[in-house]
Image (cartoon, rainbow, N blue to C red; front, side, top):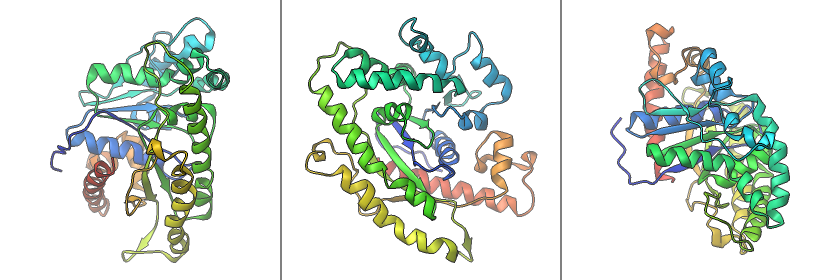
Length: 337
């Protein structure tokens, strides 16, 4: 893959759907590794208490260490807020060998931070600075490290829900993409995203305009929808199988009606909440079936698998195809930002 030279400031990115099982974590680490191969510095943040991204990238010993007394998990960064003992800890993420990839390891205890964020939202809406500080806690941790290490892209993995933790993450990101699979449940999971985000952003901006904050990194509250990724569809002789075709045909209208329209009302248009495009489909990520478990076991993306990881026979061609596919996806991805 040729070096990507597009001029770019640091971007924080989330792949989100209110429906689980759409491949968001798999796509997150694949696109991150593809961009690192293209010369970019990557930070992963595992903000899903299920810790799937961490288990993909780190072995049990590393995760256990990051959860320990002197560990640097994402929960350790916000633990003083949860315990009431102070503000955030500026912890350092774990670096993957000598690669330009770091990860704030996830932690099941991060769910304890959810209650603090719920209370903080009430304070924020009341114009209290603490509400803005706590809502911006993870954003401040990310920004502190990115400024020191000159990170190019931050990928934040979150769970499939509309809770307070995800609200804080999404209000602090620059861009978000919606992974979908062509089935009824995946499309249903997109239908409350636009209106929910519109409410969050309206309330946040209303509160922000009426308060004077001290000097700290506060979330901007204007995340931009930048497209969707079609994942896990099956093909037969290069054609989508009939079982998925009907649902796939509905995706563009679903995105337009339930994502784009709620975020481009006259009231919200000044915030530029939607990346203007003629086609919101950024990429297609095929179902690589048995290669996914091999990649998880090897703690690497599919396109880096070798014979030592169990790739044999027909799998070799699939690995090469995945590499070519993600080279193209990385280019399209940057064009969408």
